[in-house]
Image (tube, rainbow, N blue to C red):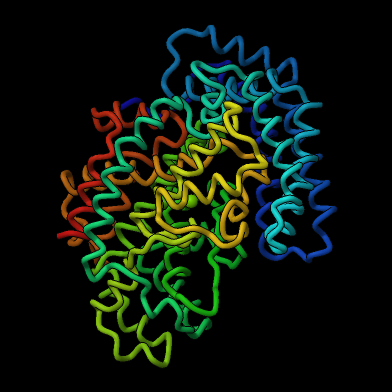
Length: 499
Ligand code: MG
């Protein structure tokens, strides 16, 4: 495997200049994290203004003639190593984006989505799709224009998908869903006859929040999270913010019931954080450390959330802490908690979905997005389309649009092509699981204070340290000598839920 050294003179010149752009990004990330955690409510408008200005500033620095000339010069250099090539690759990708999408286009799109997010919140609160419809219409039009400007191989959606998962085509994602959906349907129909199935009563029980806050910290300590380089805070929607090489922030949330949801969020975000924190130190402050593949990112968070955080060994380890969370929890056994953490039932809300039915939610969004971008369906028909598809895929139909087409924030933010990376990433995590078990040992035997470090170092050695040097497909080929396959995750689901 190639060494991580920057030797080329032109590349070194680029990296020196890039440090300015990186520094602006660092401050934007910090301000962005603060916006979702501690910022006073009234500061929102000012913060939005500042973030937009800083964004424009960094775009100017990136597209500066001198800087672009350096990138073109570096491209012609001979004998560049993989990390040097990655620097050029990432910079060229960003430059191409700004070249194809003029600043006037991007500015008006940002203005539109800033308003659309507020409109969407209100529409969702009032269960009034008509409020959001004109905005979504415009957002779809912008996305179609964006795809046309960016260019694509087979269909416009390819261009949008590529923004989130480089190197994947719509037809490949389509094929992926075609292969998993029938299999998951069969698994679900069989799970209906098991103890995993049904709404678990614990989901409705309230818990002691202050105790759960401590448990979340204990879990991160068990994972030997480096609190000198990261923080855990609280936000409405859990997220991970990568600020700098030695500064990653994660958040979790607390509702008044269903403590497993908070724990899963903490562990999910820890997986994202670890991915960032274990990037090779030599790559820090360079574009080679930027993690652009959302599928790869999600494969790391899902790995921890599902394979570690829902494992019976993990539940056993924290059993005493879990039963202290509520007054009625004392009578619960490890098995009870295991079925609670892993209960399966088709539901209306994507973020509440279990490991099996989750992918129906993503397939539905992928179909709708693709059809909107191909102008095969109209925005005004979405509430109805949503209901029909939910019925077909999950067998449930939302009574309100708030629990249906209005439930996700993504479209109001202007993001089309993002959703499929959730499923791709989850199935990718199945590949990592299979490889880890083959190379190191059964995950069940690794969930102990002494052994867990092996999981972390294996992930670092085989995936994390590469940062953004390779695309997901390249990591699969180069490190694991294989292609992407949904089979490992399907096998895992069958074994876990059907025995
Ligand atoms: Mg995630």
